[in-house]
Image (tube, rainbow, N blue to C red; front, top):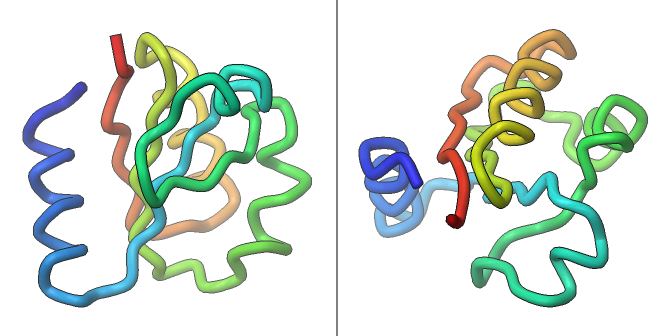
Length: 93
């Protein structure tokens, strides 16, 4: 996991600022294990669900997955959708 971005996420949370910890793995993977406080939107559903569930495009979003590849893709999708503050934390592995 990208320590710099994870530290940034922890800083947001500790300061009381809203931030979204987003897991883009499959629902099955999320059910097996996930970081506390995270929400799950699988990568293949991200374009359809993100703006409806999280309409504030300024919301800081920290994306993670298993190895880091889907997190990078998810962050890119969110940026294409217009989100302004997106960081990829990388993977759990």
